[in-house]
Image (cartoon, rainbow, N blue to C red):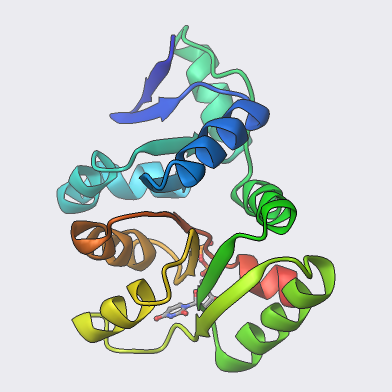
Length: 194
Ligand code: UDP
C-alpha cells in the first residue's frame, strides 16, 4: 500500500530515506510540497475538526510521526513501514540543504528561541543559505508576511507555530507559492535551539 488511512488521515507509507529522496527531487525541480508530520494528537484533532481534516487533504505528504500511528496501522491490517519523526525529517532536510547550498527560511517560535535556532543552523549547516527568519508571533491574516517570505525565494520553509496554526498558515502560503517545501515542525526550534 502506498497510502494507509488511519482514522480518515491518509498517510504516505514510505521510509525516511524514500521521503527524503522524493522531497529533494521536488525541491530540485522547483515544485512545491506541503508536508504534514502527523502524530496521534493531530489525527484525533482532525477527526473532530472537519476544517483541519480538509486542509490535511491538501498536503502532498502526510508522514507518520509517532509509534501510536504505526501501531494503529498494524491493527488495521495495513502496516506503515516505519515511523518518521518530524524533528528527524527536519534535520535530514537541513543536512541536504547544507549539501546543496539550498535557500532556507525559518518561521516560528519566540524571538529568543528563533535567534538561537538561527545560530545553531549557521554552526551545524554552514553551507545553508539562510534567507530569512521571523518569530511566530504575528498576525496570521497578514498576507504581506507571506509575500515578503516568498520574495526571498526559499527552497524550504520550516514552520514552527504548533498545530493547527502551522498547517493553516502553510495552506495560505501554498495558494500563492510557485515553489518551496513547507513543513510544520511544531516545537522543533525549541529543541534545536536548546
Ligand atoms: N508558537 C508560535 N506562535 C504561536 C503559537 C506557538 O510561534 O502563535 C510556537 C511556540 O513558541 C513553540 C511552537 O510554536 O515554539 C509550538 O510548539 P508545540 O510543542 O506546542 O507544538 P506541537 O508540537 O504541539 O505542534
